[in-house]
Amino acid sequence: MSLQEIPIDGTWVPLDAELGGAPLPDDLIAAITLIIRAETYEVQSDHGRLVLDAERRPATMDLIGQAGPNQGRTIRAIYDLTGDVLRICYELGSPERPQAFESAPGTLQFLVTYRRTDAPWPADRS
Image (cartoon, rainbow, N blue to C red; front, top):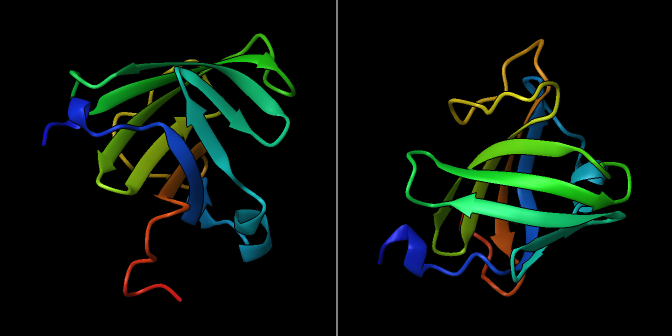
């Protein structure tokens, strides 16, 4: 199945996340839920349009804030969708797009691995 054939719409919760090379605390990870529906996104009080390009390698994602803390801002990201696992690397500190799935120290790159809420947890997770 190609990347375009796998639907990205759904409700996603993080398996893990790091910002600037440091893991996010479990309580912050537990507070995150990403909802993607019909080219829109919602994360807590942040809502907006979602523009995907699955043909690029890596695939790209632009989150265009329309309400909430990112209103009027475009966040550039790359993503990888494999079945019920979605990995996204967001660039929170500049208008540039991340080039790799990494969150290096001293950056504001936010790397998150999500799973669909109705998908089973991977075997190495509790």
